Image (cartoon, rainbow, N blue to C red; front, side, top):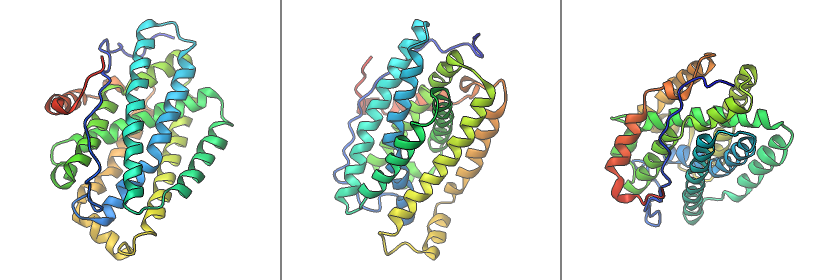
Amino acid sequence: MAALFEPVRDLPTIRRPHINLEAVPRDWYGGSPEITCFVNALHLFIPAGETFFVRTVNAASRTIPDPLLKEQVARFVGQEIIHGQLHRSYQRMQIDQGQEISSWLCWYEQLAYGRMEARRPLVLNLSITVALEHLISSLGEWILKPGHSLAQVADPEMAALFHWHAAEEIEHKAIAFDVYHAFSGNLFIRWLGLVIALGEMLSFWLSASWHLARQDSRIKASTLVHGFAKFPDFLSIIPCLLRATWLYMWPGFHPNKINNDALAAEFLREFDPMMTGGG
């Protein structure tokens, strides 16, 4: 199929950030157990999700002859593998801090990938991957924008981890989309993938948050209100996801039309001493 948008010629860089999570405090987000729990929950399902992205994009790209896109896929896979490694270190940090996560991870991976992924055709799994990549890069833009509390109150190592991941999600934001368009491009399957992606992401995020919150006696309904009131920028996650959904629904949508590349590039330049490039 003809390209919807002129592809970016630059290739993503595979980086290996020097981030040490050994001394991260339990309530690493501004001393708030509630916000820390909410963000920790996100990282219960990110590593397996990124492995799913790699599987689907790799499988679909085997049928695509475009050498540039194949090289972009190789860099995309390289970045996602490093993301998964760092986020599994994050999970080990959670275990070291006394959080029980194995039972939830077992349930989640068996349901999401042992059953749901296995029963869907590749084109639908790819469309879900594309939608999730768009949603995650939109959240990446959200946390990289000046004024977000992450940069101001979070443990520096954790802030670096999140900012690096966010910047690279923006850097490779169009690759899965371009693979989907070359593989199928069916608009209705793309829309269906977004509906499934939103439902799964929010359901698993809430489920993981509940699993972690039950283990912390300090977290109650009343303290949740106080915790989110202390960091009101977290409420803006709702309009962020709504805007991302609205943009994605347009037939002529392409990730490269979203003007957030300079935001990611600025972070990567600033934090370059922490990074080891890989091509």
